[in-house]
Image 1 (tube, rainbow, N blue to C red):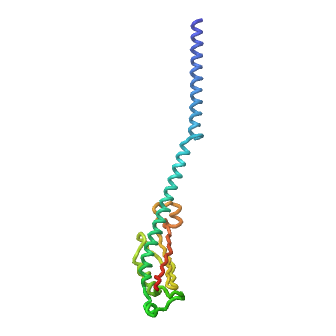
Image 2: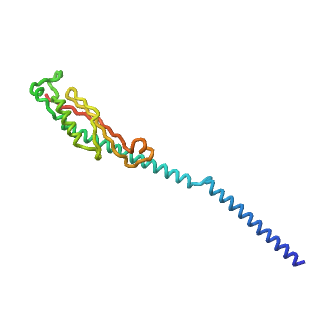
Length: 184
């Protein structure tokens, strides 16, 4: 009888082991399913936040580079326009043709055609990051000069979609002005 009891316990131990194995297999399947689903996982959130931060930082780099390029272009334009605005119209200057101001003060007259020639030669002699600068507008009226210049620079970080659309280049433009001095 004792032998049969031990045999029963052996069978129950065998069945217990098989139950335990089934339980562990089910638990392993559940845990495997749990890892695949990513429910409640912080890794998805952290990786997506890192990706967003990376994209924003690349965008900020491109925006700040565009701003610096615009400042450089404005500086080049101001330097060139300052040289051009010193083109004195000697005939008007010595004839003292003044404006209609009652206090007998007038602006130093600017020779617009000479100023345009100087401005064109100054701009053509300069470059924005090894790219040519184009004069897109010129206005010289009442001894006041306004000029628009533009150029195109290569983006620091090239996005594949952006590169296909614009060739990875960013257009930069600037409008500058100068007025002659009041004399009187």
